[in-house]
Length: 291
View (tube, one colour):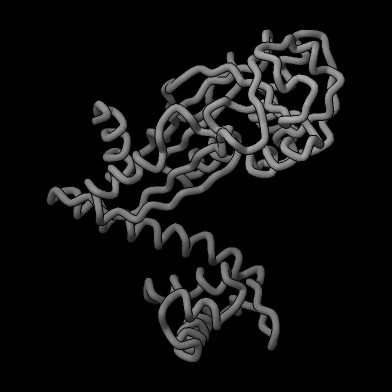
């Protein structure tokens, strides 16, 4: 059994296609198929159910994938640890971020990191804070930028607070409140809202504010895309709560401060269980003063 065979198996499982897996691994499809079949003969099990149009892992294949991914991760970690011992930071860095991170300039930070550590492959994932924390705990991510309601702290991971922010109401340019500088939360209780998916920390920020004020509201649209939120607001279909910094000017929307409105805390979170050299380097870079 060779590491390359494990890479082929993982690629086929994720691509659901021997052809696409070959393209991903830069090898002709026939050679990849031959290696997978050779591994199946060695193991004495069938890893994939195949038809001319469909490929998916068998039960044995699903079980094998767990160890295959772990073995590949261990091999990559061994290489990056050996490189770090000689002063070279390499390997992979998995970064998670909420769609509305404002505490840092993430593209500029990634640019600084890439310039300093060009051998590190960066993998960026955008999701809700709860999913990102779960990925940190499972080892799927190295670091993450989270946004949680005030009074809520990340559990099961290390974290440090980056900023605190009060969200503003976002309304269309033609909305009856568009010219107001400030509103009370109760002024918005009868509005139709677009918000993040129910049950996510991003949604909880607004839900908790309304609950604390003894108010109810109607959330008609749910999405994790701030672009879609702003488009719905621009069309006059809904009102949103967002951090002011993520609302671009000139988009046909207005931002309004809200007394008693939702608030959040942004965190940098990471797992302190054997962090990789790349993760330690990224955390160290964030500790440095910005130029």
